[in-house]
Length: 200
Image 1 (cartoon, rainbow, N blue to C red):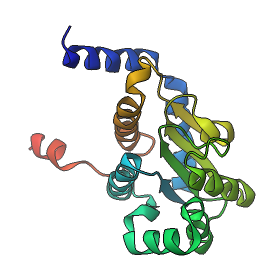
Image 2 (cartoon, rainbow, N blue to C red):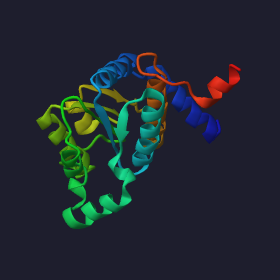
Image 3 (tube, rainbow, N blue to C red):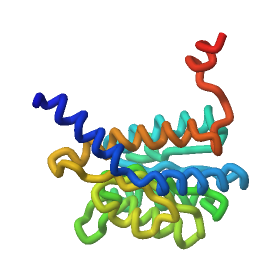
Image 4 (cartoon, helix red, strand yellow):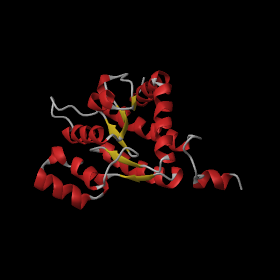
């Protein structure tokens, strides 16, 4: 078996094992956010931060939910990292944005955050603040989901089918899941360009 065959076989196994009910629960939660005219704050670091940017575009344009990713503002991000430290980059951003119970914090992360192992402490601190103000919490995470899975109202955990490929599959399936969500009849408002072009 070539590596390409192995990788795609693992992806198929993930699709076969993923918790469909968890995905639907996330869709239901986001439908409430939309109905209440709340906002979604996408939080992630590394490759997951890039996914946050893409997801913001899709949720704003296709779903018409006001959405933001703090990592899109590199000036503020680096200023906060430099002046206040990496573990606190998200929490004050959410405070300044007046995070409230109508809003949702949506985590994209491989590990979900773990203070004991000093992995993504910024996500953990942001989630603690979200809990404090009563905001909704959701996410797409890998491994056992870490702190995100423990505190989320709805969370999709990407199954581990090969311990050597946790990160690439977790980050790839973040995209699969959010694209599913913005296409979901409970959320989708606007047709995407190519689909509308094909119908003509």
